[in-house]
Image (cartoon, rainbow, N blue to C red; front, side):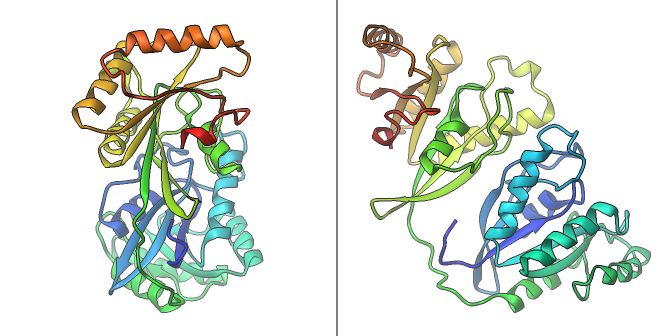
Length: 339
C-alpha cells in the first residue's frame, strides 16, 4: 500500500458483494468471488484511479457476529484493521436484504471510529430496488448510493463521492520490489510474512488452505519499498481442487509471473516432491530469481541441519546457484537474512 495515497476500504457483512465491487472498481479480477461466506479472509490491496486521482482500495472479509463460522473471529479482526487503515470507508449493504442486525452492528463500529463513510446499496438492479434504498437513511450515514456491482450501475456515482470526500495527497506511485512467497500448503508462508512484519497481517492457522487469495503486504527495509505477496498453498493433485482452490492456484501462478524475486518455502519435515521440482523448473525457465527457504528447523542440531541442506541440494542439483537457507518463521530465526 502506498502511504502517500488516500486509502478506501470496502466493508460489510458476508455476501453483500464486496469482492465483486472491488473487482469492478479496479477493473480486474483480483479478489475471488463466490457465494460461500468467508471466501475473502484477509485484506486485499490495489491501487484504483478515477478522474486522474489515485487511491489505495482495500477488499476485506465479511464482518459477522456469528463466531461459530470458521475463521470468523480472525476475519472480523482483519475487517477492523481495514477500517482503521482507511481514510474513507465504503459501507456496502444489500438492497435485496434490507437493513439487517449485522448491518446495524457494523454501523455502530463505524461511528465509533469517526471515519468518513459512504453508504452504498448493492444489488439495486431495478427501479423497485433503487426506491427501497431510502430505507437505509436510518443508519445515519447520509444519502445511500444505489449500485449494482455486477452490472456496473451507479459505479461512477460512487467513485465521484469517493473523490469528493478525498483529502488530496501525493499520488505518485513509487517503484517497489515485489517478492512472492510460494510453496505447498501449510509450510508457514503466512507465518513468515507475519514474522517479517512483526504483526498479524495475515491469518495463520494449522488448517491447510487458510490463505486463498494472494495477499499483498507493504513494508520498507533500508529505505526500499517492498511488496510481499503471500499465496495459497499449491496442491499436487489438481483434480481434487474445488472451484475456490482452483482460483487460488491461478493467483499463485500470477504471483510467480509478476514478482521480481520468489521465496520458495519448504517444510523441513516434507520431502521435495514433483510439484516442487516442477515449480522450480518454471522459475528457472522464466529466469526468475529464487531463494529456497527450509522452514521449521528450530529444533534441529547442526548435523541434522547439514543433512537436510545436503538432501535439498542433491534433489535440486539442476539449480546449484540458487541459495538455500534454513529458517524458523515461527521463532524469527535467520528470516532477516533471507530478504
